[in-house]
Image (cartoon, rainbow, N blue to C red):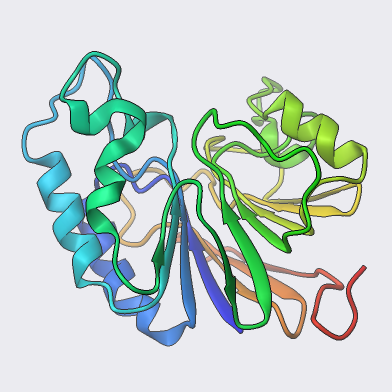
Length: 231
């Protein structure tokens, strides 16, 4: 089963148009937060309507978790705890709080700042922030933006087998292993003007992940992760 993992699209129309075309080549599309570009100092005019229209045009099965730019406290009620995601619900579309089975694997969509399950049996989590103290959650300058509770859970061997994240825009690495958990974060230094977002193609059966960035940079890793041989 092939997954396309993208994150931190920040309401960029050209990236959503690319996504609608590219996602047709995959079995499942995973978006791990910051679909919008919200905060108290940025305009919300038309942003939600545009992004929802893009998402509704995607026919590939779609899983979404929210990020910190998907909600604004005290604004329109639709933006409280990313409540706008509820309007997207349809068959083969999963959002914050959902747990689902797909292609023989189990998935969970973790809301931004949501309470983490204490013990997980899921294969894959969509969670905006990577674990802390690993290269996917540490910026190139050394600042850590990973989730400390998630990091503790992974170090205790109680995390998912695979965590798809974003949030840290220029991490020290796009991949890291913590406990039994592989952490993947495709974001990099390409910037906001690229024609396509950074993305990762994950083949769960083969246990492989391939990163592609707009600069032409590519890298791959063997996750040792499949239905027949998981580690």
